[in-house]
Amino acid sequence: MSRMRYLLPALLVPAAVGTALAAGGASQATPQPLSEAMSCEIRISDTAGGWAVEPVALSAAAVAGEYEFTVSKVSKSGTAVSSQSGDFAALPGEAVVLGTAVFDRKGTIAAELTVRWSGGAVSCERRYPGA
Image 1 (cartoon, rainbow, N blue to C red):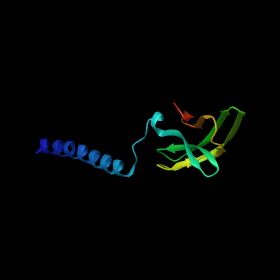
Image 2 (image 1 turned 180 degrees about the vertical axis):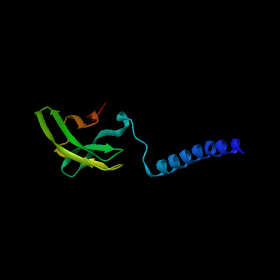
Image 3 (image 1 turned 60 degrees about the horizontal axis):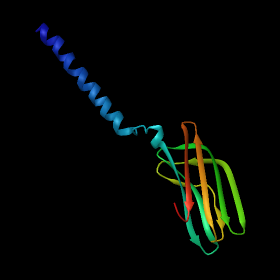
Image 4 (image 1 turned 180 degrees about the horizontal axis):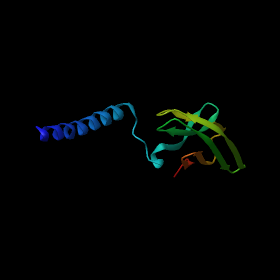
């Protein structure tokens, strides 16, 4: 009988811990590594007004931070540069368009975006047309 007294609590503790872990795992999201928490991209589309260049932040978690965006257009007639910066807030799985710059369709575009938040920073570049 005394052996049963010790055996029962030994069996119940792991079961209780497993139940608590299962309940906690169901209600909490798995933390994302910093490298996967945020990403960025630069979208370029052909519109009626010319090439529209949009910096975009993508987040796996609710996050707020700041961004810096610079785009240059080089053509035979010269170079045009647009710089934008500011604050942003993103929700999980939501793409946030941070700004827009529109250029005529002559020449090439080189764009760079840096997104910073309390967990780190991520940068991306894009050249159009071409590599």
